[in-house]
Amino acid sequence: MSHISFYPGPSRVNAKVTEYFYDAYMEGILSENHRSAAFMKLFKKTKKLLKQKLDVPEDYEIIFTSSATECWEIIAQSLTAKASFHVYNGAFGNKWCEYAGKLGVETHAASFDIEDSIPIKLLAVPDEADVVCVTQNETSNGTQVSDVELTILRRQFADRLIAVDATSSMAATTLPFKMADVWFASVQKGFGLPSGMGIMILSPTAVAKAEKLNENDHYNSLLFSIANSRKDQTPYTPNILGIYLLYRLMEDRRPIEEINRKVKNRFLDWMDFLNKFDSWTPLVENESVRSTTVIPLKAEPSVIKELLEKSSDAGFTLGSGYGEWKEDTIRIANFPSIKKKEIQSLRFFLKKNFD
Ligand SMILES: *Cc1c(COP(=O)(O)O)cnc(C)c1O
Image 1 (cartoon, helix red, strand yellow):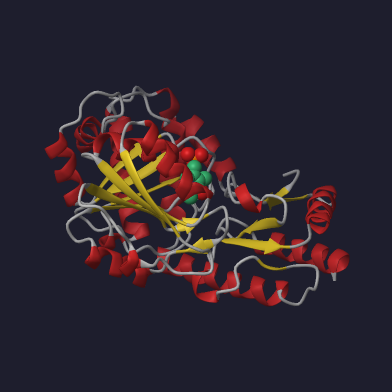
Image 2 (cartoon, rainbow, N blue to C red):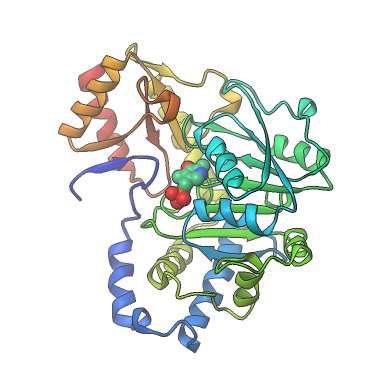
């Protein structure tokens, strides 16, 4: 590989994808019709493995989409009767709200500070907002919504649908699937797979809501996708290679509790290491809201520029800042597919040049 990527998406793809690519070709699955028995078998195995390895409740449904952005739209189009409520502290949560608005949903929003947890008791969610939208891991600023917060949210909004964007945490950390109705991610972050696919996980309540709304106007209408998924098929020709890669990755993956432990330990090591430098500070001071998968550092814009340039010359791709944090932060991805020796070489470089 030319550059070692610490970009938080698209991120370093898992090293085993070369082998998976080759096998996909040799096994002939890429030339199979998507209504064939061979594809249906792959689809079924992939959903089963996802449930097993990520600890998804047995009664939840899984569908595949093309991206997390598409999942935003599906929620607005197929699961929202009238209005959605968005609570966020960063660029992705904000974009989700904008996308829903563009599809004609009445959107209500509350923002909170990156140093705070969600002010759940203070949220003024209007009666007509039937979906509450939360970004579990805000990739733009490296903050995370805790399991405890999601549990309280679930209790507080028991009669609404809760939808969670877990794009940069799914497959990297454990997630409390029972505490929400809709979970989604794209595969180019925590999964460490090539981009071009999204995964949507739905509770029985979410499926019932889709049935009640009975929205059938689009190629990606949720009911249509669910009906197809139950037959191990998809409404349109899917990303068969993406599904195959996901299948192989999940087959090889350790259970999510183990991955979570590895990611957390690596994160703590990173923080220990990074805290020794004077050139930067963590963007997020409050340790209890820090993401374990995306580590943002704040520094003078000149230092940020130097960091990005020098690291690139040395063969590393660091994540640039995003949105309002573009000029004065960089982000380091801490996804499970990054190798230990790659982390060591980035640390060696940082120590040599910025200590
Ligand atoms: C990257 C990202 C998205 C968008 O993902 P796409 O696959 O490009 O649609 C949405 N939400 C979050 C939190 C992200 O990190």
